[in-house]
Image (cartoon, rainbow, N blue to C red; front, side):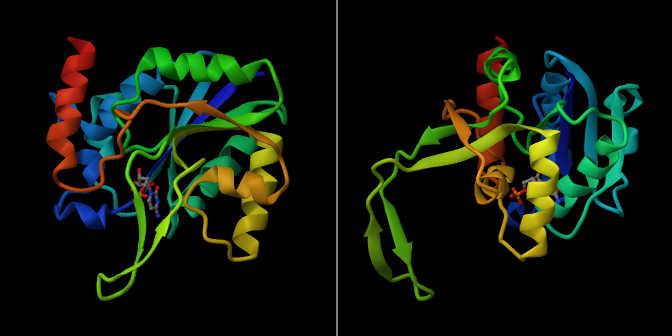
Length: 230
Ligand code: C5P
């Protein structure tokens, strides 16, 4: 079996308050997306990385990494799940059914290479997919439209899903198509797999695998990367 990696990078990063989409903001001497790609291109069993880009993307072609022959480009969709589906359809034409597909957010550049490969190795020999996740640290409030507290959630057993998430192509493609067909809100691939009734493993993830979402996340990611890489 081989590993195919999908990088959804077609978002506009509305919460980032920046003209430039967040995956192209500078981070530790490169762009966010290049930092992410640098890690992913060293994954065990890697066949190809399929990057989903916005139809109007003007930036990817200018990155050094764009020349890497293991990278393929697809046009992303309206929602993250649509972007992942477009990539899956391209992979389906080239892959075997028992091949693995790993999805990792363009906006998670602080994933450590050793952790990525431990995650891949822990799933690759089996048949069950899995995700990186971490127990939530904060107390969770349900909050109304006027910023009023409606309820406090019991956080026992609650984990925050991260990426990477890894599944067999044979499970992920039909599960995602089905979830999109019934109009399910999909913010991660695992939820589609769960809805299809497949069991999934959780691999404990670190709290420094942050998703760059708001402006203040960028200097934090810079500190994390510099500490990791010395
Ligand atoms: O917006 P959010 O932070 O959840 O986006 C997660 C990832 O999904 C980002 O890397 C973003 O570029 C990508 N995305 C996408 N297609 C969309 C929306 C988001 O590939 N339509």
